Each structure stands twice: as C-alpha cells, then as structure tokens.
Image 1 (tube, helix red, strand yellow):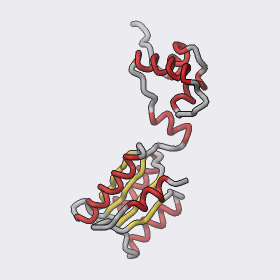
Image 2 (spheres, rainbow, N blue to C red):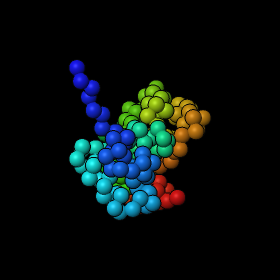
Image 3 (cartoon, rainbow, N blue to C red):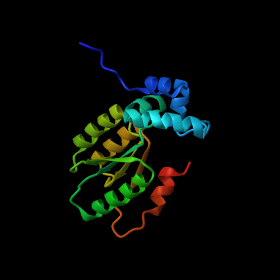
Image 4 (tube, one colour):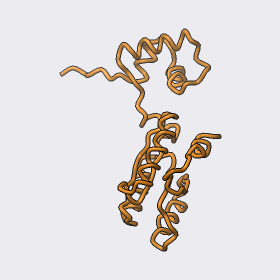
Length: 170
C-alpha cells in the first residue's frame, strides 16, 4: 500500500520555494512577506486546496479566535438579543462564538469551564449571574482558572457598541 501524501506547511514551503518560517508568516498575515512570495504561496495553497488548521495555530499562538458566551436560558428574549449582538461583534472580527446555555445549572456552568480549559477559548462573556451563592461558584471558578471574562447584563433594547471596544481594543 502506498504512502498517502500529506498536505501540510512543509509541502507548501517546498513547492513554493520558500522556508517554513516564510509560509508561517504568510498565514499569520505578517507584512514581512513580499507580494511576489505571497502570490507563490497562495498559488500552491490553491493547487492543493490547503487551509492551515486553526487548532495547529492555536497550539502555537495560544489564541483560538473563539469567545464563549454563557447564559442561563436561551429561551428568554433578552438573552437572544444578547446572543445576536455578541455574534455580530465577534463575527465582524473573524471570531467564532461558542454558546453555553446553562439552563440555570451550576453543574452545567462548571462542566463548560472544563470544556473551555481543553479547547483554549480566548475568553468568556457571562450574563445572567445575579450574585446568589451558587452563582458565585461559577464566577469564583472563572477567576481561579484565570480565564479572561466579561460580565454583562442582557441587552434587551440596549445598544451594544461598547462590547466591540472591550473585546477588540488593545
């Protein structure tokens, strides 16, 4: 049985006639790659229909371009408005939105934190925490795990433009 060719950054570099580091810089949108070199890399990528794995990039950069939103109930209109507003902001910056519908369960909140730990989510937006002792467990665990987080109220009828400034202003 023949060995299957694997399309990876090494093959892209070899066929483009450039180093692996140059291909990496190209994929990371660094401006140090000339237009001519970028065109060569792009042509090889198109030839093989190659797209870099976001998981591989996340292992190196520790950034997934994913943000989680944790809400107590997807059925409440105020939270559907919040989901829509957050998704609009995150998608405009090419971030994925991971939704956690806790169904008012502390156990589900804590299970989700384990998922966040394993998937390297960049941060979490938390809404619907009212300060009861059981809510404090979730927030305390977020802080203990040093997860970047923002706590927001639901957005029913409110302007959410401030969210973009918080999430995407250096």
